[in-house]
Each structure stands twice: as C-alpha cells, then as structure tokens.
Length: 354
Image (tube, rainbow, N blue to C red; front, side, top):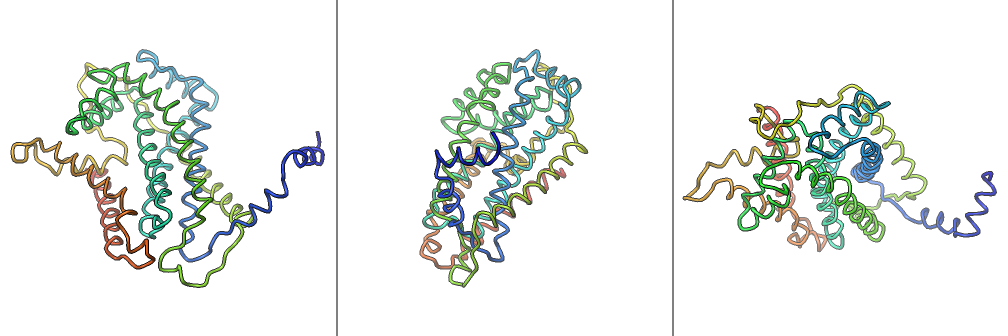
C-alpha cells in the first residue's frame, strides 16, 4: 500500500483534516520564560524512552535472588548492545527525574499552579513521587551490595513513620529484612504497577494541559504577547530539543556506563560510604541534622514527621496561595519556593560531597 492510498484509507475512516485543524488551533504563548514549556516535553520524551528500553531489558532480566545479578552481567557482556541499553536506561532514569524536578520548581516559581490549574500541579507532583519510587525499585533489581544497603536504609527509614511505619516497611520489604521477597515485590512494582499508574497520570496530566492550555507567568499575564500554533511551529521545536536530549543521553550512556557492584549478600555487613541516588541525598542530610533523641522521643521519627509535613505543605501550595489565584502578586510564596529550591540544592550538594 503506497502513501496516497494509505492516506485515503485513513481519511475514509477518520477525520484527518479535522484533527489537523484542531492541532493548528491550539496556540502556545511566546514570552521570555517560554523555555520552561520544553521541560515538560523533555520529561515526556524521557518517559517514553524509559518504557522502550525497560521492555527490552525485561526480556533478559531474571527477577530471582540467585540469578538477578548474573542476568544483569549477562545483559551487559553477552547480549548485542546490552551494555548500551542498560546504560541508556540508567541515565534516562537520572535525567527523567532531574527534568521532573526542574519542571516542578519552574511551575512553582512561575506560579503556573494557580487557579484553575491546581490538579495539573497535583498530577505532576504525584508523577514525581512515582518516578522516585521507579528509581528506588529499579536500583534494587541490580541486586548488588550497594543496592541492598541503600534499600535497607530507605525502607528502614519509612519504618520510623509513626503508627503506619511498621506496615509500610513490611509492605515494601515483603519480609522482615530485604530478601528475595523484596526483590520480587520491587520487580512487580517496577514493571507492572508503577507503569500502569504512570500511564494513567501522564494521560490525565496531558488531558488537563489540553483543557487549560499553556500557563502564562503571572507577571506577564496582562502584557501583549505573540502566540504560535502548537502544530507545526512548537511541535517541531519540541522535536529539535528531544534530538539534543537524545544525543546527550546516548553520549552519557557510551562514555559513563554505570558500574555493577559485587553480588548482594544479606548476611554480609554493608559496604562503607554507601550513598543513595542523588534525589535522596537531601533527605539523608536532613536526617543527619537531628540527634538520636529529642525530649525522650526518637529523633529520626521527628525528622521524618517534619519532612513529611514540609512535603505535604509543598503539595498544597496551590490551595494556600489565594493571592495568585486572584491574579495578584504573592511574594511570600515566591520566597517559600526559593527556600525550598535552595534547601534541596544545598543538601543535595552537601550529601554528594560528604
């Protein structure tokens, strides 16, 4: 079937011209902050790449305590381009979470969460949490000693949450300690549960974005500005940015392939200087600020409670910032956003260098 016949076949069944007219009617505002629009598209592109490379790796990965580590080594050493796709998947995860943070803080500082886009903020925030859990669950699938130690610390920290901490810890581990049951459970999260949740959230996020349109920063809302059609003008720019990101990702995958540590041994002591992934470092450094006991209470429990309250407040900012909802300037919430950003960056750098 040649191209004209294929086009006619599609047009007989679908309103192809109508869809093109609809795409051209969607407009994107141009202003000095419109660079932030591309961070959302980059994140979506990285999500797609993660799904594709993850499916390829799943063909050869064996989610069993005796064979998981060996299967990773065989993917890297025996499968054609296995080392590349494994490295590509690793760096894709790192960049995806990084751009999610960039997109989230950009949305926060530009007040793009304001009425009527509160649920856009909520779906994006939850997507960040799901992505971080993606990273944690995927990290354990290596089943090396560093992954085992890091997941022990992460799940153990969750166990210090008041009242429900024990349940969360047992639910995540599937056992008293991090064992083969934990590996099976995290594999199920990583390849089945989290992908389904992600697809639903991304679909809802895109639907809300389509309904509300692109947000304009509060400071520029009353200014005259040019608008360009989403298709093809903005879409082609998006594609060019995606090609640049693809090149950066492929370069990282080739030049900086991730290491594979020694196979995990649940009975062995943890290796020295174990650090979690970079997006957990701010939390680790925060816990270090608290002593072991405060007024007779567990210091780590108090720290986790305070961090949880701070994250909850962060999530609810669109509902608290009523001045932005009315189209007025809200310097208080601007400063709150700056403080959150500086704290996250500072603690991450301190954790990386310590």
